[in-house]
Image (cartoon, rainbow, N blue to C red):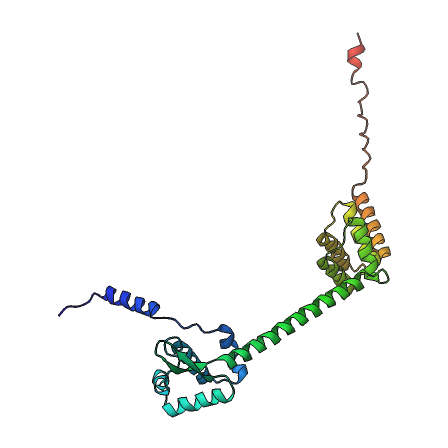
Length: 261
């Protein structure tokens, strides 16, 4: 008895598996068939018919029942149910090679239903995107309005930076306003950044958070804190007056011998 090497058996299986044909099932169908009130077992029946339709346009109920391990009656009931909802239909086609007409399953109704749902989804998605863009535009217009506190701040920043602020930078300013930082404090922090040659928002935010940590909420309090710090710094660096060294005391008559003859 001749044994076929195991490697050859596996290779033959892989070849048969990948070259015996594949079934292309639309992913959109897999994602949405339950929304069409198609049960899991009915979806599997549709996939079985899709797998046969190219070589066998009208697979028998017996064949489908055998593939799905179901009773023929159950398969016929599911086919009737799908046809009643126009997801599955029968078409008569002329087979020129055989010289006769043949029956074929058709998924035109199912495709129409899926395409309609897809179109509705696209319209809703487009409308949602347009609504979001409009909302962002209106928000940007509101933020840029010179009649609002944040509008004044943005205008000052843009004039100093020489460019329009980005939406992210505007959101940072909104965060400062929401954190109860006053307009004068925000502009004062920005001025300090400009004077230091640092114009990024992270540096300005660090200044504001430091003031918040110290409990400083007004420009007057900030200036008072600066004055206190400056005075303390100068005091610690205060100039020390050099101490005079005491004159050395010379004992009387200590050097008299040098001048006496």
